[in-house]
Length: 147
Image (cartoon, rainbow, N blue to C red):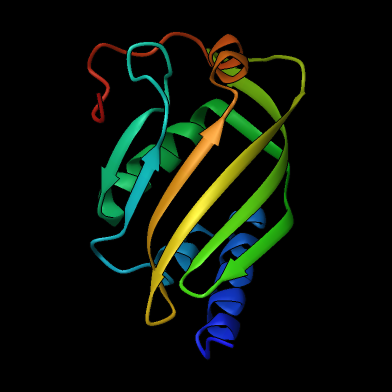
């Protein structure tokens, strides 16, 4: 058995717990400065697509998402760890907000694929139903920083 597996499981569980409780500072503290977050979607159609290189870009994206959605529920329902890699299935309940208007809540599932080095997360790829998110979040800005 890989001795890093317990460290990876503990790290990923803590990150999801902190994100679920909207403690972004703790989440960012658990990531290295050069952490890479990749939304694996077509940037031409998906508002939240592209690659964040480093924590500053990731924080800007997370703040943008937080400005546009209330996270009513965010749960990791399955976490699988294999050495320095992990996969997670998440269930979300979100309510879009913006322009002073709150719209109806909707549910979504997300898949995460993590890569760790020495028990520290270095890369995350997120897959989601981009059509669902696009229909609820509005059009992608031409000036989007990760286009």
